Image (cartoon, rainbow, N blue to C red; front, side, top):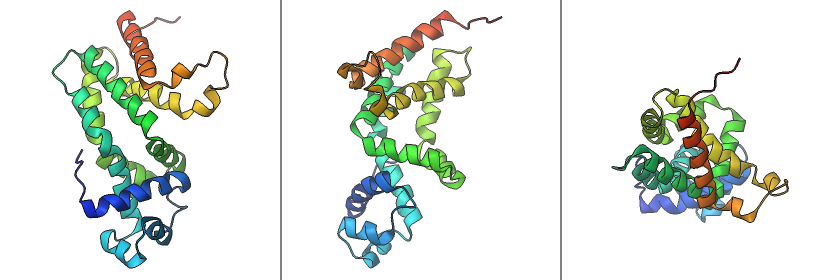
Length: 202
């Protein structure tokens, strides 16, 4: 994941991310983006030829700010169990600390725009997911690595996506908001499941 963005564009991207997160791709115009950034529309178009280009750049930037930490955890010179622990901690921290990124992903999934989803898969998440697939192959050679990778991400993403409801459910605790607490729970759950092998259901 390329994490270097020109300084001239960082201000635009940082202003655009919360706008897209709150209103979605279709709910934001280039004019409103220009106003939010403090530029006139012509200057904004000088940097980004259209809203689609700006949106994809904003998504890439939102993820790239954390991608180096995730990549370091996944590709570290350490046993796979330790890399899983470091990755889970970093990923939970990303979702916890950056609610705008979480909202952006939720909106994209619900919008079901296949063109944008394909570009996100190819341009934003490909490198990260490839490294996670590789780790899953080391952790559990007998498991489908794609399914395991999706399960790992899903356990963490869903936990924070349902937070507004989760806090009202029986047994909820303020500790359950902690990225470290959630990561430790996910890792324990996964490693116990992997080590126990597949259940044979009649």
